[in-house]
Amino acid sequence: MEVYRLSLYAADIGWSDVTALTRDRRTLALSTQLYRSLGSISANIAEGYSRGSDRDRVRFYEYSLGSARESRDWYYKARHVLDHDVIHHRVDLMSQIIRSLLVIIPAQRGRAVHEDRAPYDADDL
Image 1 (cartoon, rainbow, N blue to C red):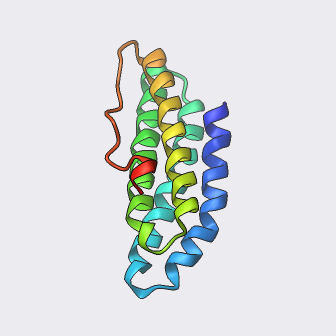
Image 2 (cartoon, one colour; image 1 turned 60 degrees about the vertical axis):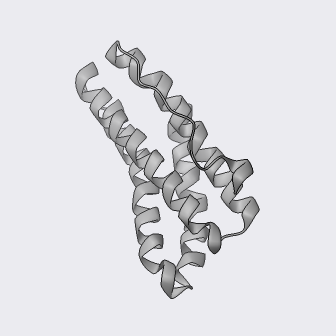
């Protein structure tokens, strides 16, 4: 699954972001939250993919969707410490993962979910 590969990539590149955030005492807690939410995206996709029923699978994909949205939120909050280009890339990556999950989930579930326009549009950063 492409979304799984993207989420592994996000967790991998997030390592350096989290390291930078730990250097500032004010963003230490943020760094922990970001790293946990990034890791949760791929972990829940993997667990969901291994489930035998559509209902179980969708539940984990929805957890992954929540973690991707949470990660995007933490990146937005990290904009004061991380470089503008890094934030722009990470918010775009999280949005791409979210869009992918918003295609997969309804296909598995049989009803639609949607994404409202994010308040952290990359152009506004």
